[in-house]
Length: 250
Ligand code: ADP
Image (cartoon, rainbow, N blue to C red):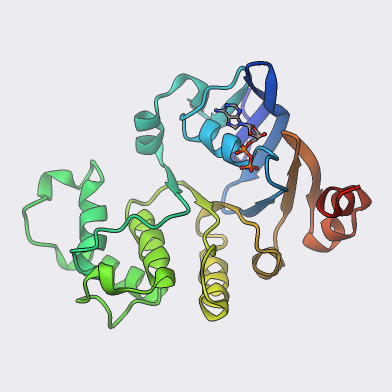
């Protein structure tokens, strides 16, 4: 069963490792165009959840749907990536020897619809797309720099730009501001707020100040022991006694 209007629908998903439930009847849905923050203490199941969504881990039971048609539990990682789920891991993995522009160009040409043009010159439309992404990721004017010379934060933005070049329908970001300076963190919040409504995005993040910045108009989901402990507006979630207990310890 899929859920109308949802880009992602996890229904009663359990993942057991030798009897231990990393996910325990997890049910969650993300609407098209939503920016959803996922928080939760270490071991809550956040990584396992993203592994299920990207096909790296199979649910032991339950189901996972992407859009109205894709049954994620029956797809390979490769098929899921090509169906339109893009994941950014914590550590940036840009091509350090290549320039910022080339990184975006390569990301675009890795898209199977564009790949036949790998050695062709960019069309003006493609150049415009790269220009728009450069501005969005705050790297306009840096396009000719080797990516290896960028700051940690700039590399993270470049990688978000590379994901966007592939036009995924759902973007998963794993701790995008880990290791960033305060100024970079603030700019990342601005960037994600600009993407709100245009892309469906799931952000797993520990930095609560950052979560508060990007969750003002959206929902936050708190995972704990493999299930949803609380979900709703940041203010409500923060004031929830069960959430406080989990974060402060009992
Ligand atoms: P989070 O990302 O929220 O910190 P994880 O999804 O990484 O949580 O882990 C949830 C729980 O599942 C943890 O207790 C972790 O030790 C356990 N776990 C995760 N992956 C495995 C695995 N491959 N084998 C056994 N236990 C695992």
